[in-house]
Amino acid sequence: MSSSVKVVVTGAAGQIAYSLIPRLVDGRTFGDKKVDLALVEIPQVVDKLEGLVMELEDSYFPNMGQVTYTDNFAEASKDADWFLLVGSIPRGIVYNGKKIEERSDLLSINGGIFVDQGKAIGSYGKDDAKILVVGNPANTNAFIGKNAANNDNQLWMAMTMLDSNRAKSIISKKTNTNIDDINNMIIWGNHSPTMYPDAENVLISNELGSSVINDMEWTESSFIPKVQQRGKAVIDARGASSATSAAKAAIDTVMACESPTLSGNCFSAAIASDGSYDVPEGLICGYPLITLEDGTIEIKRDISLSDFAKSKFKISIDELLSEKEAVKHLMQ
Ligand code: NAX
Image (cartoon, rainbow, N blue to C red; front, top):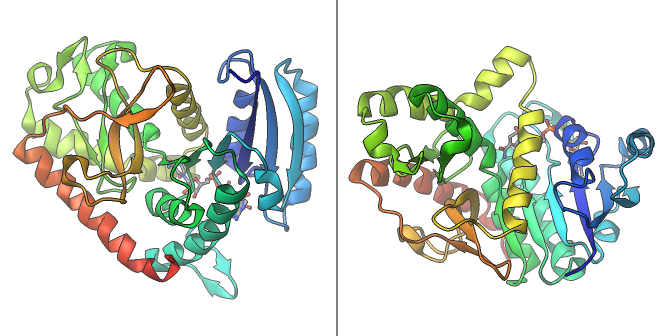
């Protein structure tokens, strides 16, 4: 096993990255490996990263290796093991003279960025690199990036761990269970308000949620909408989108991929469908995942979905299909 790991982080001057980057080098996320960081920003703000690098140096992280920053993504990509693609253009800003209001515009602009980043990752990233897309619309950005990278040995994921952690927290309160005793919290579908958080297959102290919760009225009218709308609730309360919890979720995803999943457990992220659970092949879809002893990441295929679950999941798959249609001009 390599004693060092190179991690590329985009959006490195943003608010998620400010919580995320120190945790990458704290000696916990990658164990005792040396962590080299390549931080990427757009040209307008790249100079700000000098301040972040100063803070990292001042924090004294024994596991921190070489730290570089640049606005040249391809250069940063060389021989990287991990890519945390946090940067994207948010809704509401003026881009090339036009205010970005529509989801279709957002898909198109960020899609263009992910074509270039995907090509660079496919060409310069390590052959077994893992890519976690955080920047929204995360699933479709990952779909575009994976297509452009054209390298099936690399693993493209979109982050749904924050949704999974939010769902665990709500179930922990509802059932008065320690959050540590809640496992297999699956987020099916898209990281968007159509996602389906699965309260039937979640394990609460090793028992299925369907028997412990046993309250469909609560599941349908309280739990599911709360998880789906939690990002908006944080924005309304904080005046800014989730940052520290998003950073923690990215770290949780990296750690879930870096060590084998305990028997019977799984974790949540979106990866390319191989047709499992009747999802059209290629869509980047939220699934239950497991990391095998050899480091391979697979979809857990033995989860049984109720008719209720299937109907909710279908809404999210249909949304992913319509996003795919909206970005088809970016596919080659
Ligand atoms: P910020 O606006 O604070 O930071 C984003 C940074 O990305 C900016 O500094 C910007 O200059 C940079 N950037 C934009 N395009 C770039 C590019 N092509 N290359 C490199 N850097 C680029 O946003 P922040 O709060 O950090 O959120 C980042 C993204 O995460 C947003 O798209 C947000 O919607 C998304 N989120 C995703 C979540 C998830 O669970 N998947 C949850 C949290 C968050 O909402």
